[in-house]
Length: 239
Ligand SMILES: [Zn+2]
Image 1: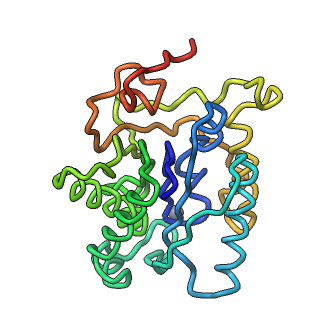
Image 2: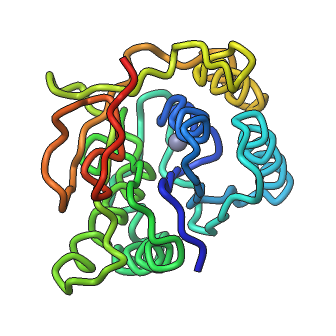
Protein backbone atom coordinates (compact mmCIF):
# COMPACT_ATOMS: atom_id res chain seq x y z
CA UNK A 1 0.00 0.00 0.00
CA UNK A 2 1.33 3.40 -1.05
CA UNK A 3 -0.46 6.38 0.46
CA UNK A 4 -1.09 9.37 -1.77
CA UNK A 5 -2.82 12.70 -1.31
CA UNK A 6 -4.32 12.76 -4.80
CA UNK A 7 -5.46 10.00 -7.14
CA UNK A 8 -6.24 11.06 -10.71
CA UNK A 9 -8.48 8.57 -12.53
CA UNK A 10 -8.28 9.16 -16.27
CA UNK A 11 -10.27 7.24 -18.86
CA UNK A 12 -7.63 7.69 -21.59
CA UNK A 13 -4.03 8.83 -21.89
CA UNK A 14 -4.30 12.67 -22.24
CA UNK A 15 -7.25 13.04 -19.83
CA UNK A 16 -4.78 13.48 -16.95
CA UNK A 17 -4.21 17.01 -18.33
CA UNK A 18 -6.87 17.52 -21.04
CA UNK A 19 -9.67 16.86 -18.52
CA UNK A 20 -7.96 17.53 -15.19
CA UNK A 21 -5.94 20.61 -16.13
CA UNK A 22 -2.80 21.31 -14.17
CA UNK A 23 -3.92 19.46 -11.04
CA UNK A 24 -0.89 17.14 -11.11
CA UNK A 25 1.89 19.79 -11.27
CA UNK A 26 -0.18 22.06 -8.98
CA UNK A 27 -0.37 19.34 -6.31
CA UNK A 28 3.28 18.34 -6.69
CA UNK A 29 4.49 21.91 -6.22
CA UNK A 30 2.55 21.99 -2.94
CA UNK A 31 4.48 18.91 -1.84
CA UNK A 32 1.50 16.59 -2.25
CA UNK A 33 1.88 13.01 -3.43
CA UNK A 34 0.03 11.96 -6.57
CA UNK A 35 -0.85 8.70 -8.30
CA UNK A 36 -2.38 8.43 -11.75
CA UNK A 37 -4.54 5.61 -13.05
CA UNK A 38 -5.55 5.31 -16.69
CA UNK A 39 -8.42 2.88 -17.13
CA UNK A 40 -8.58 2.06 -20.83
CA UNK A 41 -6.31 0.59 -23.44
CA UNK A 42 -6.59 0.59 -27.24
CA UNK A 43 -7.16 -2.81 -28.89
CA UNK A 44 -4.35 -2.15 -31.40
CA UNK A 45 -1.20 -3.05 -29.47
CA UNK A 46 1.01 -0.61 -31.37
CA UNK A 47 -1.33 2.32 -30.77
CA UNK A 48 -1.78 1.23 -27.13
CA UNK A 49 2.00 1.24 -26.59
CA UNK A 50 2.34 4.64 -28.26
CA UNK A 51 -0.36 6.20 -26.12
CA UNK A 52 1.05 4.69 -22.92
CA UNK A 53 4.46 6.11 -23.79
CA UNK A 54 2.84 9.50 -24.40
CA UNK A 55 1.24 9.20 -20.97
CA UNK A 56 4.59 8.42 -19.35
CA UNK A 57 6.17 11.42 -21.08
CA UNK A 58 3.26 13.61 -19.97
CA UNK A 59 3.64 12.60 -16.33
CA UNK A 60 7.39 13.21 -16.55
CA UNK A 61 6.66 16.71 -17.92
CA UNK A 62 4.31 17.26 -14.95
CA UNK A 63 7.20 16.38 -12.62
CA UNK A 64 5.68 13.11 -11.46
CA UNK A 65 8.13 10.29 -10.86
CA UNK A 66 7.11 6.67 -11.22
CA UNK A 67 4.70 4.78 -13.39
CA UNK A 68 0.98 5.27 -13.97
CA UNK A 69 -1.39 2.44 -13.10
CA UNK A 70 -2.57 1.08 -16.44
CA UNK A 71 -5.98 -0.55 -16.61
CA UNK A 72 -7.11 -2.81 -19.43
CA UNK A 73 -10.74 -1.81 -19.96
CA UNK A 74 -11.25 -1.43 -23.72
CA UNK A 75 -11.07 2.06 -25.17
CA UNK A 76 -14.41 2.03 -26.97
CA UNK A 77 -17.59 3.90 -27.73
CA UNK A 78 -16.31 6.70 -29.97
CA UNK A 79 -18.26 6.59 -33.24
CA UNK A 80 -17.30 9.91 -34.82
CA UNK A 81 -17.10 13.61 -33.93
CA UNK A 82 -19.74 14.14 -31.23
CA UNK A 83 -21.16 10.64 -31.76
CA UNK A 84 -20.83 7.88 -29.17
CA UNK A 85 -22.18 4.48 -28.24
CA UNK A 86 -24.32 4.33 -25.11
CA UNK A 87 -23.04 3.87 -21.58
CA UNK A 88 -24.81 0.46 -21.43
CA UNK A 89 -22.85 -0.58 -24.55
CA UNK A 90 -19.61 0.33 -22.78
CA UNK A 91 -20.54 -1.52 -19.57
CA UNK A 92 -21.02 -4.67 -21.61
CA UNK A 93 -17.51 -4.38 -23.05
CA UNK A 94 -16.02 -3.46 -19.68
CA UNK A 95 -17.33 -6.66 -18.08
CA UNK A 96 -20.13 -4.87 -16.25
CA UNK A 97 -20.47 -1.86 -13.98
CA UNK A 98 -19.54 -3.91 -10.90
CA UNK A 99 -16.21 -4.93 -12.43
CA UNK A 100 -15.25 -1.28 -12.90
CA UNK A 101 -16.41 -0.45 -9.36
CA UNK A 102 -14.32 -3.30 -7.91
CA UNK A 103 -11.27 -2.14 -9.83
CA UNK A 104 -11.55 1.42 -8.49
CA UNK A 105 -12.22 0.15 -4.96
CA UNK A 106 -8.96 -1.78 -5.20
CA UNK A 107 -7.18 1.47 -6.15
CA UNK A 108 -8.75 3.29 -3.18
CA UNK A 109 -7.49 0.53 -0.87
CA UNK A 110 -4.06 0.47 -2.49
CA UNK A 111 -3.41 4.23 -2.46
CA UNK A 112 -5.75 5.51 0.28
CA UNK A 113 -6.11 8.85 -1.57
CA UNK A 114 -7.47 11.83 0.34
CA UNK A 115 -8.79 13.37 -2.87
CA UNK A 116 -9.81 11.85 -6.19
CA UNK A 117 -10.11 13.69 -9.51
CA UNK A 118 -12.65 11.80 -11.62
CA UNK A 119 -14.55 12.20 -14.84
CA UNK A 120 -18.08 13.49 -14.42
CA UNK A 121 -20.34 10.42 -14.41
CA UNK A 122 -23.38 12.18 -15.82
CA UNK A 123 -21.83 14.34 -18.52
CA UNK A 124 -18.61 12.50 -19.36
CA UNK A 125 -17.47 16.11 -19.95
CA UNK A 126 -18.64 16.00 -23.58
CA UNK A 127 -20.68 12.81 -23.65
CA UNK A 128 -17.87 10.27 -24.01
CA UNK A 129 -19.24 7.05 -22.46
CA UNK A 130 -15.75 5.87 -21.37
CA UNK A 131 -15.54 9.06 -19.30
CA UNK A 132 -19.00 8.41 -17.85
CA UNK A 133 -18.10 4.80 -17.02
CA UNK A 134 -14.83 5.91 -15.37
CA UNK A 135 -16.74 8.55 -13.38
CA UNK A 136 -19.44 6.12 -12.25
CA UNK A 137 -16.80 3.58 -11.22
CA UNK A 138 -15.16 6.20 -8.96
CA UNK A 139 -18.53 7.19 -7.46
CA UNK A 140 -19.85 3.62 -7.10
CA UNK A 141 -16.68 2.50 -5.31
CA UNK A 142 -16.84 5.56 -3.02
CA UNK A 143 -20.51 4.90 -2.19
CA UNK A 144 -19.83 1.26 -1.36
CA UNK A 145 -16.81 1.94 0.83
CA UNK A 146 -18.49 4.90 2.53
CA UNK A 147 -21.64 2.88 3.33
CA UNK A 148 -19.43 0.19 4.90
CA UNK A 149 -17.48 2.75 6.96
CA UNK A 150 -14.31 1.64 5.20
CA UNK A 151 -11.33 3.87 6.13
CA UNK A 152 -10.14 3.64 2.52
CA UNK A 153 -13.01 5.95 1.50
CA UNK A 154 -11.44 9.09 0.00
CA UNK A 155 -12.41 12.39 1.66
CA UNK A 156 -13.67 13.87 -1.60
CA UNK A 157 -14.17 13.28 -5.30
CA UNK A 158 -13.95 16.22 -7.69
CA UNK A 159 -15.27 16.30 -11.25
CA UNK A 160 -15.37 18.85 -14.08
CA UNK A 161 -18.32 21.15 -13.67
CA UNK A 162 -19.78 24.29 -15.20
CA UNK A 163 -21.86 24.98 -12.05
CA UNK A 164 -21.70 28.50 -10.64
CA UNK A 165 -19.79 27.32 -7.57
CA UNK A 166 -17.19 25.30 -9.50
CA UNK A 167 -13.61 26.55 -9.32
CA UNK A 168 -10.06 25.65 -10.16
CA UNK A 169 -6.90 25.98 -8.09
CA UNK A 170 -4.61 28.88 -8.94
CA UNK A 171 -2.39 26.98 -11.33
CA UNK A 172 -1.55 29.92 -13.61
CA UNK A 173 0.67 31.68 -11.03
CA UNK A 174 4.47 31.45 -11.52
CA UNK A 175 6.12 29.30 -8.86
CA UNK A 176 9.67 29.81 -7.53
CA UNK A 177 9.94 26.03 -7.09
CA UNK A 178 9.36 25.71 -10.86
CA UNK A 179 11.95 28.38 -11.74
CA UNK A 180 9.18 30.89 -12.31
CA UNK A 181 7.03 28.66 -14.46
CA UNK A 182 3.43 27.99 -13.55
CA UNK A 183 1.84 24.57 -13.03
CA UNK A 184 -0.29 25.39 -16.10
CA UNK A 185 2.87 25.74 -18.20
CA UNK A 186 3.99 22.29 -17.08
CA UNK A 187 0.52 20.99 -17.84
CA UNK A 188 0.64 22.48 -21.35
CA UNK A 189 4.03 20.84 -21.91
CA UNK A 190 2.55 17.57 -20.65
CA UNK A 191 -0.36 17.85 -23.07
CA UNK A 192 2.07 18.37 -25.96
CA UNK A 193 3.52 14.93 -25.18
CA UNK A 194 0.27 13.42 -26.51
CA UNK A 195 1.44 13.92 -30.08
CA UNK A 196 -1.07 11.43 -31.50
CA UNK A 197 -4.00 13.47 -30.16
CA UNK A 198 -5.64 16.56 -31.64
CA UNK A 199 -5.74 18.27 -28.22
CA UNK A 200 -1.92 18.27 -27.90
CA UNK A 201 -1.53 22.00 -28.50
CA UNK A 202 -4.64 23.16 -26.66
CA UNK A 203 -2.83 24.17 -23.47
CA UNK A 204 -4.52 24.24 -20.05
CA UNK A 205 -7.90 25.69 -20.85
CA UNK A 206 -8.85 28.54 -18.51
CA UNK A 207 -12.50 27.46 -18.34
CA UNK A 208 -11.71 24.12 -16.65
CA UNK A 209 -13.46 24.15 -13.28
CA UNK A 210 -14.29 21.49 -10.73
CA UNK A 211 -16.53 20.79 -7.78
CA UNK A 212 -17.04 17.97 -5.32
CA UNK A 213 -19.43 15.24 -6.39
CA UNK A 214 -18.77 13.24 -3.21
CA UNK A 215 -17.49 14.45 0.17
CA UNK A 216 -17.40 13.03 3.67
CA UNK A 217 -15.75 16.19 5.05
CA UNK A 218 -18.31 18.85 4.11
CA UNK A 219 -18.32 21.50 1.40
CA UNK A 220 -15.42 23.60 0.23
CA UNK A 221 -15.45 27.09 1.73
CA UNK A 222 -12.07 28.44 0.69
CA UNK A 223 -12.25 27.30 -2.95
CA UNK A 224 -8.50 27.39 -3.32
CA UNK A 225 -7.42 24.11 -1.74
CA UNK A 226 -8.63 20.73 -2.96
CA UNK A 227 -7.34 19.26 0.31
CA UNK A 228 -9.49 21.58 2.45
CA UNK A 229 -11.00 19.67 5.41
CA UNK A 230 -8.96 16.57 4.57
CA UNK A 231 -6.70 16.92 7.57
CA UNK A 232 -7.07 18.20 11.10
CA UNK A 233 -4.83 21.22 10.76
CA UNK A 234 -5.35 23.21 7.58
CA UNK A 235 -2.71 25.39 6.04
CA UNK A 236 -4.35 28.62 4.86
CA UNK A 237 -4.34 29.25 1.12
CA UNK A 238 -1.75 31.62 -0.31
CA UNK A 239 -3.31 34.93 -1.28
ZN1 LIG B 1 -10.73 10.76 -22.73
